[in-house]
Length: 282
Image (cartoon, rainbow, N blue to C red; front, side):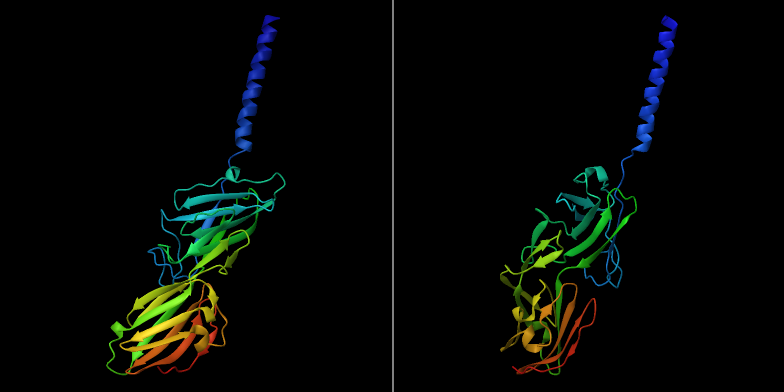
């Protein structure tokens, strides 16, 4: 009886060890694969971009990665490029969730309940980039492509002169809404509660990043010596009602002694919206 018992125990131990090894093989930790890129239309200034603005993040860059589920679960991770590894087991989900939604923002933000406020007056890096990808199957091992796009509107004012005006002394003041609330779950940007702020530039070219907003809310004040001209974007381009994220408005002004003339306005970015010609005399 003793020999039979010993043989039985040996087989039992081998069987249990075999089950343990099989479990390790059949239930591995599944990684979340991410592929990131920055769309060519963005204006983020980094050594990771090509001349046309396309490219990718550099090793060590940090963006905030947000995962939401149909059941209302949310997970937030500060993702460090080249260092962070994501696993499905770390994502908060309900048992019946079949898909999740990915969102991300750069630079990293303090996200609460899927939302954050972006303030251009306080932001060290004003070039906010956003990426969205919905309906990702749970535990997929297929890499998910996140394409980051420019969230703010870029306003460029170019000055030329036909006289001896010193363009380096021209001053531009832009008054516009400066804050917005972003909801990464809904994929929306809301500026309804925003206060206005003033942004300044000096020289023959002025560049501003502003929150997407109505053209009637954006005021330009141009000063050349004793001459000052103030107008809204709506005043000089009544055809357009809104300045959209990911697009660029270019205003060309001709500065003369005693006058500032409007040369032309072009809105471009994801698609060319057109050109407006006109004139304003100070």
